[in-house]
Length: 483
Image (cartoon, rainbow, N blue to C red; front, top):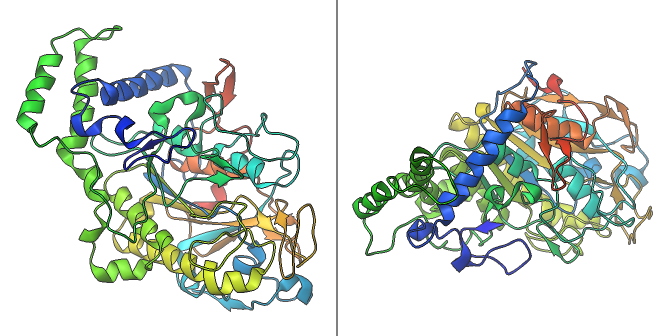
């Protein structure tokens, strides 16, 4: 992945020095223009591959997407789908609370989001049977790519990311709906996707190539952020840079291509420097103190604020990933895991939910106030849900007061981008164990994201072995979510 402020040295990431050389705009190499040229070549091939039209409700309603990925998987029963009439061993310790949407109830741990319920819909019947055991890795890959993880082991554990992987959702959006010149297409915030020892699971472009990897910013935004490196060296002015650009346009580029194409790629690279939109988006210190306080003084909350700023700057797809590893032991503090195999209720009540509730509610309210929610699709979801029965192991080690992994039925919040607020899609059974009305596969949700952006989820691309693949293995957009 391509990081603005430096990599972690993990597979698939670049060091600070290796980053696209954006500060010098490739004056001593052609990193960024080649990056843009690779995108253009891929897009031309994509155009030739065609794709059926989608004229159903909601198609193309969204301009951008914010994906809030709650890695570790929160309990759907305790947050989104309370079961007050179920036995105490299932309903748990939290009572349901009313929201601004008539007939819609949330768990008591989400009071701020309850006030925003008229702005979002809930899908309460997501479910699937993962490959192998119900482990995080296979579920993450399924959710973030729209494909089954054919290379994973029978345990369902992750494998190291590679260029043979199928592309992540954000990378596909960057390829088929790139941002306008001067803006970033795909940015990853807060933390990388982490499962077991592997970093970046299902987060990069895979076989699409590194031109569609995300720009990553994993610095803690509660501290002062370093300036984005979309800037020129002290001894290079915009005029001098443009003169060099003009000189290059009369030179036939090696490897083919017309001078016009060459100029176009350098023009897009120049636009990142000249517009300064991308770098300004990361200047959180320019936000009023009251706005920053509304999101909360946490890594997650301030990352949600960064996401809003990026959307304002023209970024097409932003992924805000909860900062704890998916399979970390749940621990106190604002950045701990959602993987509550034990102590589910105190962890949610005192640590996880207050942070998530404040940041996500502020994001929805802020987008709406700025007139951005109608064109920004917002999704909050984990890779699966948690087991209905408390303290009963299904496949994993469960301690006192814990809930196990549960991919068979769980929930997602969906807002903006033409989605009708105050709605419930689907109904789970009386214990929240299985869908009973309108089941939804994660692939249907991924197809819905593409659909909202005006991308046909049935279009094909070639994988690393030159085999035609659909953008989503199977499934259809949930058109009932839209106006």
